[in-house]
Image (cartoon, rainbow, N blue to C red; front, side):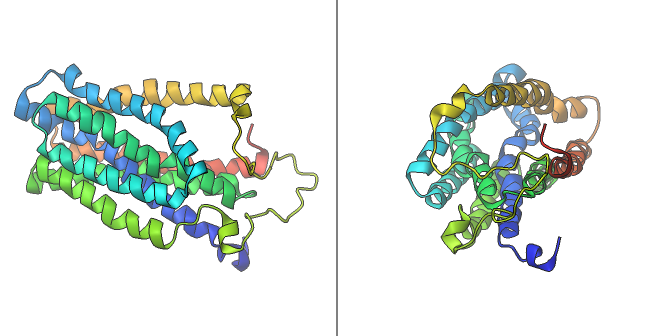
Length: 293
């Protein structure tokens, strides 16, 4: 990658996306860190308390397509800033909750709407706009922030130990707003054409490459819903994230504390999962070399 490639503004979008993924999805993944403190204070049943995470994931799945439609019809950056503010306010308000219904409404319903408005449903298409070639590398670097969102839990654990779980919710919300709003307002650009640029590799011939590299469609279309690949990708996310990951991760911290480990140690193991995910996400650059399939 030459100096000219390194100066391409799209890499700034990748960096912003990585930071955003860490902070936005750190809000969801911090549930596992807050879970023991909430249980210890109120003594609620684990299943009923963990339901707020299930609601969060379900609502996010419903809100994500709507966030994409809203961004298509409105200014994406404005949508994302509103999403950050709504997400920050919702997660901060969790510090005031004292009933399960409050957590269901705030963390289960409001938080995922904010996540959808400012998170991957808009960040992903932006990266596709900026990168025609090197798309696997760009996606991998940005998704590495998702791995760091688990490491972010260590910061949350220290904050809980220092201030208590209620102020920690406010710290998470305020940190999100203070960091992401300036990044989105000042630096985030949804399409390279807004800066008079073209997507990376858009003017380069594909030649005899076996890679199926195409520019994203300029107009949104519902025809994609007829694609078998789209539904297979959706199912893969359901099985990996919905069933294979969150059903375990939500209870991991509490389980480790139950068998005698400290909260900091448990959060560190939780973060270790994110470290390995970080390196795993970087492997997506292989798709630039050998093809997506």
